[in-house]
Image 1 (cartoon, one colour):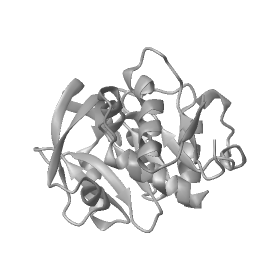
Image 2 (image 1 turned 120 degrees about the horizontal axis):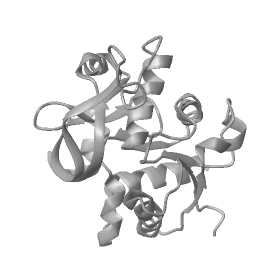
Image 3 (image 1 turned 180 degrees about the vertical axis):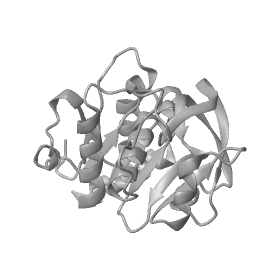
Image 4 (image 1 turned 30 degrees about the vertical axis):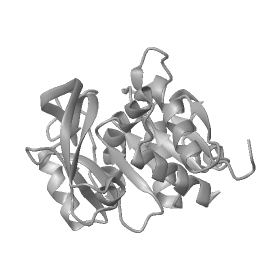
Length: 236
């Protein structure tokens, strides 16, 4: 590995049977190759994360909070996301990573006293992360990008089809709060449910409810992952 090759921390509980987990190292390698360098990654099981993981994460150039939640240590995953958000370390969250990025932001910035994920507390009132009206397990769907958004500019097209494996998303009760920023919606589905967010003023902070990593299973370099790896390299 060359000195300039970025190191990515993969926050999540690795499971070889999870398709997204199979795809992520390939997606990072393809992104690195497209940029003319390598890309190293290391799985960090949430059970190993400290209450303040900033020292643990200091050796990495980027943080990716990966699919397949609930995690063993929900608070550890949220703390890792907070570290990325507050320190300016490039961050990508996909599927469960999107959900936990929203929980972190709701708690820390919106001041939601109990930012609840309905998968962990199905009877909770006003969960931040709620069941999707239509489950998106092993499905693909169109996502439409916000004009002028960072995510939209990376794709270079008004919309695209992406693959999903999730049953939960941002509650509409909370999605309206994204209009005031600095965390903003950058993609929606046809029903105007939020499918991606980005953080203004951050070197790279993007979370998607879909799984762009799956593109690697067909040998394609994904523009979001390429941009994430490039941001991580520049931050190193």
